[in-house]
Length: 119
Image (cartoon, rainbow, N blue to C red; front, side):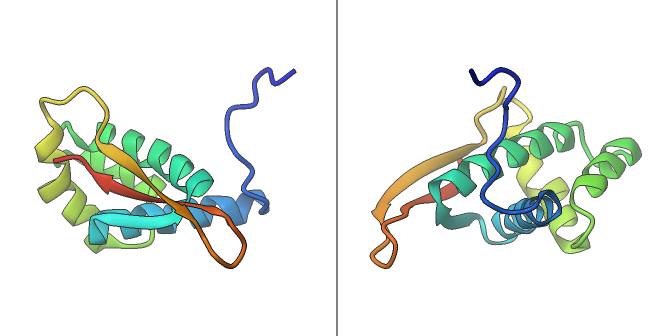
């Protein structure tokens, strides 16, 4: 049974997984899209949705502090999130990203997907 198992392990250690997801969310914020495996993209999507939900309230101290705790690496990504991305979704109740399947990777036949913001 799969009771209370709510995230993918992605075949890495917990600290590596945390850093990997943070870096991929920063890439999504910075460049607007992310191409990776489907499993990773789904986990990045979960984290990105939570971050945008926290950032939607505006550039307030507490919201910025909460998001900085999740993305401590790049201040530029935080600025872009609060000034460009989050204001677009103030009226939207979730579903800020879309996942587009791109087929299989030739080398190892991993399922590839593109994650991008919904306009």
